[in-house]
Length: 470
Image (cartoon, rainbow, N blue to C red; front, side):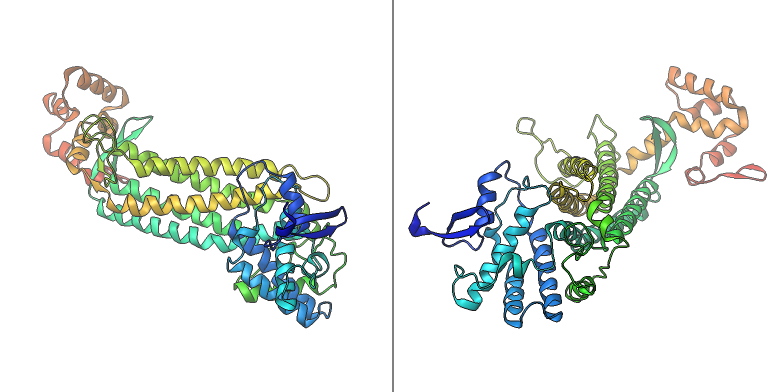
C-alpha cells in the first residue's frame, strides 16, 4: 500500500497497513486478504442488529461501572451511526469467513471503536476506544453473531407478515367474488367433482393464514438470545446481572420482548431455532409456489389451455411471437420460492454441522435465513399486487367445463351404482355426448330430478340428506 494513503495498526500477529480513510482496522484487513470467495456480504439489517447489541452492551457495562461515561457515550453514538447506515461501505467481508463470524464481529468492533475514538480525539488513528477491551466488553463472537441473526430476523419478520396478510386478504376477496363460479375440479390433472372457483381461492387464503401462523410460532423461539453467554454460554468475564441489563436496554430500543434462554449453553451450541424459522420459510415457499403454479395452469391458453381465469398482463411475453402474454409474475415468484428453498437447505445443513460447544457455520445460516425472508417478502408482494388483485374469472369457460366433466357421474352413484355410472362415462366419451344427455336419452331419471341433482349450488358442499340426495 502507498504509505501516504495508509496508517499502521498492530494486533497480536504484528503490524498491518490500513487504508487511511477506513474506519475498519487491522483485523478486517487480514480478513480481506484471507477471504475473497464470493460477492456475498453481511446484509445491512444484520450489521445493524450487531450494532444494536453492542449499543445495549455499552449501556449495560456503563450501568455496571465497567465502562466510563465518556467511552460509553462515544461507543453508543458510533453504534447509532452504524444502525443508520452511515458506514455501509466499511463492512466489506465475505460471508465465507471464520465460521463463527469472528471476522465480521471484529470488523464491526473496529468501525465502532475507530469512530468512537474519532469522536473523542478527532482522529480515528488514535485508539482511545479499543475494539476488544471496550466495544466487545462482555461479549464474544459466539454470542454476538447468533444473537444478531435472531434480532435481525425478528425485526425483519413484520414486513413479511404484513405482505402475507395483504395477500391473504386479496385471495379472500377473490374467494367471495368467484363464489358463484362453478367449475370442474381436477385431481391427477383429470376431471374431478365440481368446485367453485371461489372455493379454490378460499383454500389459497387458508394456506397463507397457516403459513403466517407457522412464522409467528417459529419467531417466538428467536426471542431467546444467547447474548451475555460469552464464549461457550457460561457467561465468563461478565457480571451476573449483565444479561438482564443488556436485554432491558435492547428491548427498550427495539420494542421487542427479547429474553434470556433457558440454557445459555444450548443457545450457543444449537442453531435449531434458526433452522425452525428457516423451515417455516420453506413451508411458505412451498405454498406460494403451489399457488403460483395453479394460477399458471388455470390461466393457460388463451385458446389451447384451461383458460378459466385471466391474469393481468404485465409485459409482452415473447420476442418472436406477436401478441403472446405470459404469466411472468407467477414465473418470477416460482423462481423466488426455489431460491428460498435453496436457502433453507443451506441453513439446515449448516445448523446440523455444529460441534461440541459451538456451531462454526453461523455466517451461512444468517445470510441464507435473512435472504430467504427478504426474497419471499418481495415475491409475496409481487404476487399480490401484480397478479392476484387483478385476476378475473372466465365464467363461460368454467361453466362449460362443469357441464362437460365426466366426474359428474359421481353424483349418479347413489342412484345407479358405481359400475353403471362408470359405463355411462365410457359411453359418453365414445359417443361425444354429455352425461346429462345420456341420462335423459336412456330415461334413467326424470328431467326435473336430474336438473335438481345437477344443480351447481348443491354440488360444492355436503349434499346428502336423510332422504338421500338433496
